Image (cartoon, rainbow, N blue to C red; front, side):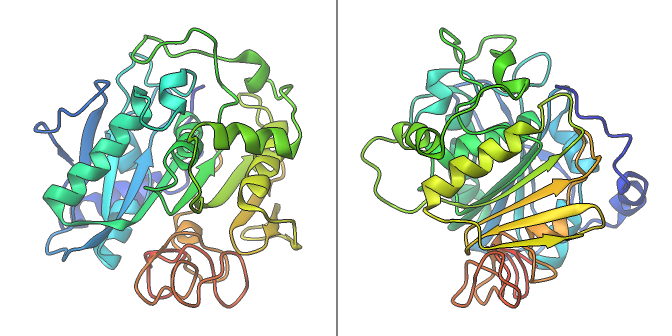
Length: 335
């Protein structure tokens, strides 16, 4: 499940900007609250004032925390908007995340998902993070983990943005164990032939946190039509799943949004899909959309007045009000 960096147009720009960051990526060696041996790396902007929003940015197979830090713009945006970024580092030798074991799929069951949640708790306790404004995003295996976190820990995460992933639980492998190297692989899911009804997918998510009656995170789902690693049918299956979990139906379709060749599918105020025509497995990360800048397309509302989503006026995916809102005008709400 290799996530090639060669098509990331921002790479060269980010390299030139690295020296301009107010802080640096730090390995948190004091973090040892497993249950797996995933490493915790964090970017905390200089002078950030708490409680600060937290974005968990999760790398792809063959990747590392440092690679995702270097090849996305979240750290640069953190300087601008005052949020913390956690970059988990997968414990497996191939850099893939455990999204196959019952433990990792289940609330407080263990596995990599619980280790990441414990990183969030550590950041709240030690770096001034805001437990009420926590968001997840990732690519490929990291996108799959984003969906797992949204399903198993809806009480922790307020929104997620998944780039080239699969539905929550789609990668389940009977007998897979947390911490095994390598994590389980489900070929039926990766090939896009694991098809279920929206109700079945939704019930699967709800089964991972029995008895939970609260709300689930707002979601952005990204996928390329030419993906041959995690086949394109997973896009429709993921939208079916989250539309059922969130209780929404499609309300609008917009062409060439946010870029030429992308089709935006809007499901009320809590779910948006982006299909990239001719785009392969490497869907470029759209940090500005995640952060809701501009406010029309975002997802993470991180700000108290987030014009795009989590705030009083937030409305994930509606034109004037955006979606997640990490910032005053943002979408995760950060920007």
